[in-house]
Length: 336
Image (cartoon, rainbow, N blue to C red; front, side, top):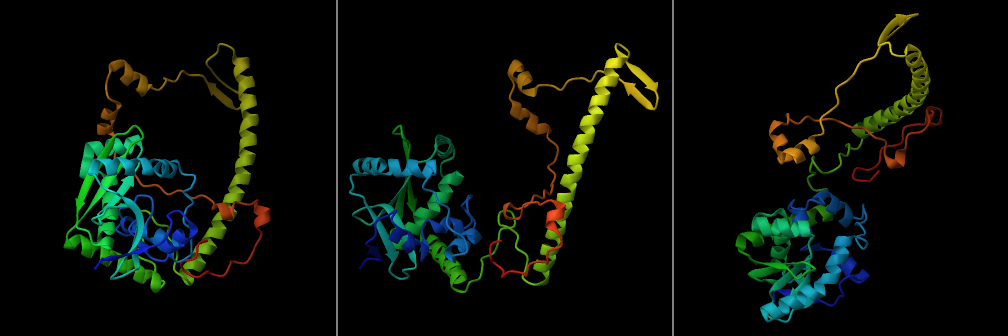
């Protein structure tokens, strides 16, 4: 008996997108495990619960390249592996919530995943192999595919437009199966209970707790925007005053002619020569040295905090802001 069910869907269609959104896909697993540098588990949860729209990747050149090269790469795989590979949408029989869209499924139910990386990513994979972050990201996806179809191995295939390729065969053991299933079920429970997964402080947005904390945040945010509006007005005035002062300085300097210093009528002027900065790029080019050597002399990193007005809450003129009432706190988890 098969470990999976085939779902009659065409990849890339709206019904296919709906089907993916209603379960945990193999593509979701790297994100849930924290391996995806482009999306966090919390961001995925926002999408799955309808709080945020998935990004439209149709115009992404990387996605477009993948769509263009996938049929060619599949044909190369079929020829080199002596296989017939069929794209398929499948669900795990024991728990249909786990599902996968396969680039190719062999006659022996081995999943094949095709990627068309950039030249930079391909070089990284060539140099670092299974230690590459790119490999680890997609390895988790292939493992999830194997769990879905009940396969003990899967194939991860990277293909460049010039015909170069890299093939990785990925073995799956019981520990891998437990990792995927536990992560998927735990994340799905977050969706069913409408409870966000643990946030990543380094990547996710901070969201104040509902109630007093959110009220205080909105209070300080309103005051910050008012102060920023006033600062911008003062900066505009200061810019004008500096411009007028520069005109006076130019006139005084011209009157001094060749004199280097003076102290007359309440103003002291001193002209001096300042040493120019070193063009480090030109220096290293002339010496034939590696600019990376400077990293050995870099001081310890420091942490800074930057405040900017949100796009949906642009800084207004101070008179325009007025004294509006603080908005009522929104439900935790809403995007604002």
